[in-house]
Image (cartoon, rainbow over all chains, first blue to last red; front, side):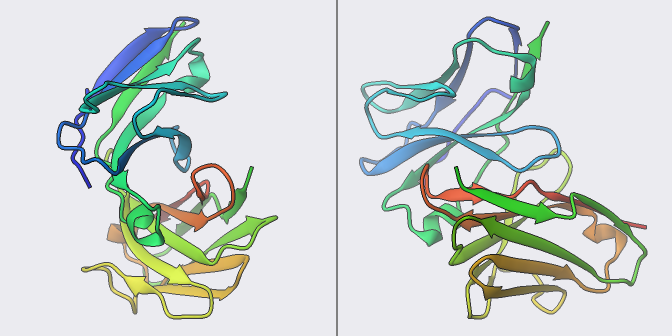
Length: 115
Length: 115
């Protein structure tokens, strides 16, 4: 799996968009970008994933640069409940049991949403 | 979406005793279950992978006789920490191969404190 680099921490004002960056300069052509978050003392939660096109779901949007070396997770209207550690992971496909289980979560970005 | 119910959410036990953690898949069959451990302010570390009806595969450095995994049915997997010691205190999380989404769902985690 390609290595990812994320800022250690970020703050965001409640109601504003939270933009979380991730660098994955060694990503290879068949690797997807996955985002998860972990609220304190809970299990991680899958957010979104993408290959090269921008993706949007009910939770967030994922913007992947054209060269695929970086991506940004966007929470359009952050709430206090979005305070969590956000993990960006790059891994190959197909999403077999092997690469899903062995995905390295890294240290992530601690997002703090403030009133 | 798919839900994995993990119990207990927290447990305190005396050193030398054993603790069982259960993960149940609700409304779907989990053929594969991953078990992770997470120490404070650290990321998830894969401990073992289990497939229903067969022996679990443990990651290097994880003692299989200490961390007993049973995956006897398609809806239930258990992790038993035997002869627990204070250094086993950690956050334990399961993750099941599940339908929909990215294809995997985490449990809510179990905070184990050994005193």
